[in-house]
Length: 283
Image (cartoon, rainbow, N blue to C red):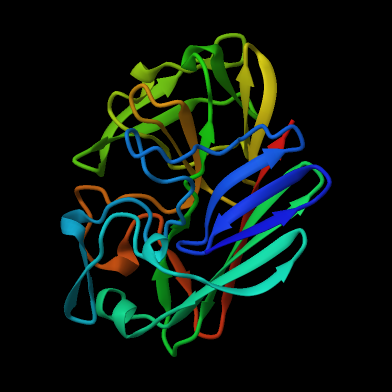
């Protein structure tokens, strides 16, 4: 089942499975979200929860027990309930269940709220602790933004001038190896070679937005004021770029296995609610 929201500027379509944004179009029918062709990557914009990236040995320890949790968690593979619908907004929800507790022994509700305002699509995350203990979690976005035509016609521009140091992945874990992006006239030209070692992982950034330009003309911006970390990724020869605001990231090789000690993990106390949002702005 799919849910459609719209305003006078934009139309967004969300698949209730995974609460996944699968289309964002303007009034001229221009599509801004990757079509999901499995030849390259069969997703559009999955929700990453309750982990972002990969755990060491795909497992974590809690209360003297080992739990196995696959890459990026389970939310993207669950059917969400549509709990509120307006013309320009929709709210989706999943809750902990007998199945989730087998791999993640914490009681929660996760809500995803999509809202169109003028030329913006806001995507808000709400994590509610419904148990009587602390909840350790990560959450993140993975929107694939459609870049038709020649990939090298595109560039990205960070909000601020800063050292753009990123971490490399090794066997899906964060390695100790870092590199730096070197802007040219304030922009980073896109090439597939940038991603030959998988995603670029920024643990911290001063910039809170990234603009995508085509032939040096801005056409889309991702604003992520709330989020401390970011991933940027594409597949070789694929006509999309993922700009991924995150709370948390993959384990390092030194990770102890204790999920409460995991680098980048968020801790939500009993009866507390976590809120964050980012938006995709059409320029």
